[in-house]
Amino acid sequence: MTRIDPKSYKQDVPEFGHKMLKYYALDPEYINPNNGSYGRTPKPIQLAIDEITAKSRSCPDLFHKISYLPMLIDTREKLAFLVGAKKDEVVLVENASVALNFDLQNFEWEEVDIVISFSSTYNAISRTVEHISDPSDIMHHESRVPSDPQRYHLSVQSTLAKEPCKTQ
Image (cartoon, rainbow, N blue to C red; front, top):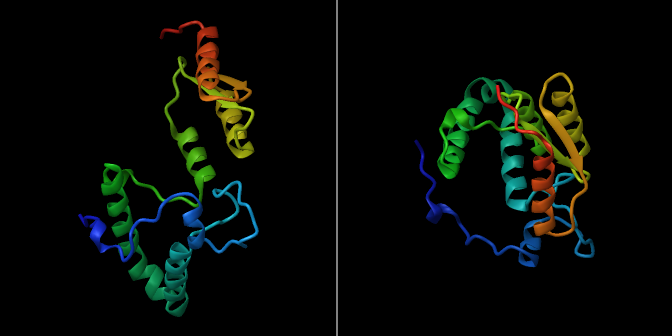
């Protein structure tokens, strides 16, 4: 397995916060409240994407039939090492919504399971939660998001306390 050597990076890991802005192609006057939406890809990642795209377009057959799979396997190995998983447990998908939908629909739900979604849950995920809850016996609760972490914790505890303990 290929190991990730932190010294192999050409630059130091950037500090989070405003110092990260130079890694994004955002208008300096724009205040970005949600980095996870609408394709805000960091410049170094975009450069790598552009390089791979150029390879795939210059020799499409060679890329898709021969070059792509070893690159994918190498990436999965590196990510698996990074997160402490096995390569075959790492799946690359388009975005967080696809990942959560995949997980929610493939999880082996049991009658004692409870799914809690909040008013702030992204619509695509809320619909998946409703979908998996409808035909099964799992419980689905929707709650408003409390304003602070302690109230959030209490809200979850309260929701769980309302459900009688089920046994199989």
